[in-house]
Amino acid sequence: MHSLRKTLLRDCDVTPQALWLQRRQLLALAGAGLGLPAAAAEGENPSALADIASYNNYYEFSTDKKAVKVLAQALTLKPWTVSVEGEVEKPYTVDADDLARLFGVEERIYRLRCVEGWSMVVPWSGFALSKLIERARPTSRARFVAFESLQRSSEMIGQRGGSLPWPYREGLRIDEAMHPLAFAVTGLYGQSLPKQNGAPLRLALPWKYGFKSPKAITRIRLVNEQPPTSWSQLSPSEYGFYGNVNPQVAHPRWSQARENRLGELQKRPTLPFNGYAESVAALYQGQDPKALY
Ligand SMILES: Nc1nc2c(c(=O)[nH]1)N[C@H]1C(S)=C(S)[C@@H](COP(=O)(O)O)O[C@H]1N2
Ligand SMILES: [Mo]
Image 1 (cartoon, rainbow, N blue to C red):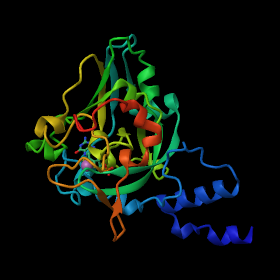
Image 2: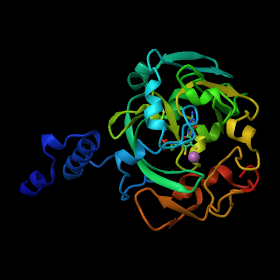
Image 3: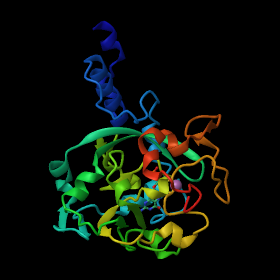
């Protein structure tokens, strides 16, 4: 017990990151484990909260990753509703404040790999995306899921320009969206999600490049045809519909063979499906990884 006391943090150190580390040490000591799925980035050190929350791609605010943190504070989070609609038996709308009560909260430590060649390890909290979708009872015609992020140029000043077609749209095949790794995120480091990371609701799809994980989601639509997405509309040759991490398929402007983990000096090799192949490769059996990459 003495060594435990020493490693625990004092009140004066309390930040979300410190609290999270402390809770994790207690859980490990209690032998409770973290209940993480096998494919979680267990054993890898989570990136610093300061890095995760200040180096952000969020074009609604700016294309300058370091400017987003400040600009995103202009976003009003209440009221916020998310609708689930389209090819479903029971369309519904939920207030973001009710998500935890309806779907619970668990933690997932996932690697995040941006198509630009940097990566980090993030302790997200939230719930399986499948729960949000199942509640609406998709019909047999539901083959894809289309996500729409908030459009509000009064607060999102990047939307006054044309860096991307607005609103930010993304999409998944339904089997991808229902996969147990597909995660609906409401928190970071055990606290509520910072605005710059996509509050109040974003996705984390750890086997795909980061652009496939929309922030500030307001509308989820089950559809029959593959939906258009903002990035592939902007530049179809650079951003495919699937966006699966693949070190062997180069982006036209960047090799994807290696990546720069935030806070590290040496690059590390990028793994197929970002290291989650064991869990997700079966989704793509027989599919050409270069088609829509
Ligand atoms: N709505 C919205 N979602 C978005 C983006 C964006 O510009 N707008 N950028 C994407 C990209 S390219 C990445 S790498 C991740 C970055 O997430 P992070 O800032 O939490 O690291 O968010 C993704 N989700
Ligand atoms: Mo990205």
